[in-house]
Length: 330
Image (tube, rainbow, N blue to C red; front, side, top):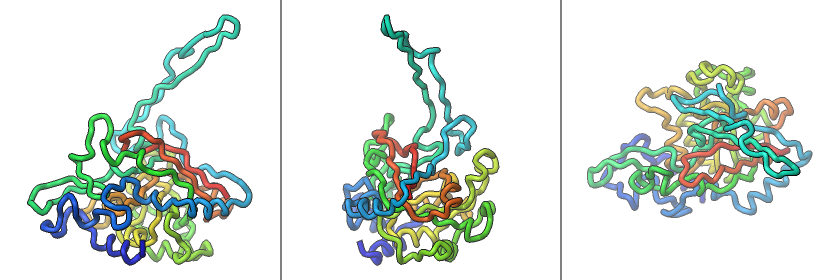
């Protein structure tokens, strides 16, 4: 898709439910149907992961060194709002012994929580929507590619836009080290990363925005993982990208973005009338998925900014998101 089309898609999209109501129907709206993948698409940016992209990314591997980019799932990790995480081991042992001669025993675990939206978490197609006025005057909650809440909602999993529709990510990863550009361990609370910051970080790493390619995973480092063991500080007003960088990202056509904090975007938004609008611009309107609560320190220590990136969302049918174990390979 030409970048002129995606730019028009980004700039023409409704910010928070406004726009020309007379032009909005289920079949046609300001960001749907998708101009390339059509009205039935539920995979979004992962469609960019073509065989050509996979082969190109695989050629980035030179040493075979693997870097863990995800946090450990454990009790006490920072959680958004009242989300929960609890794991227990039923029984001791859970089962057995089996076999008169070998006496096998085993342990299982029981896991409870909003598993797709805790820890290192992947925001899928059905996670974020926008309430808006349609052409007939009715209100509708609209999600990626124009799917409405009535079409997707289900008590035991989403009927459409479940995370199982997202393809595996095997692509080039680019770390955009904004904290490194600023010469700090971590950016200040509520610092909004600008396009100038992004370009400066890329330049510092010997790269330019012109080198970015459709399907890349663009990963932002704010230094915020430093506070992972301090949940109160970690959860309070992290730095992040804003609407300016969101529009820039839509032009770049990444398969996904990610960061080392819990929402990737700046909190609070500088406009007090907006709440998490970058999520709407990228996920709902452009199908650019978001992986939060990552950690990049080992990459930074080794001066690695370009690598093979691998992440496979767990195929929870009807899930809004997924846990996972993202890795970088150089």
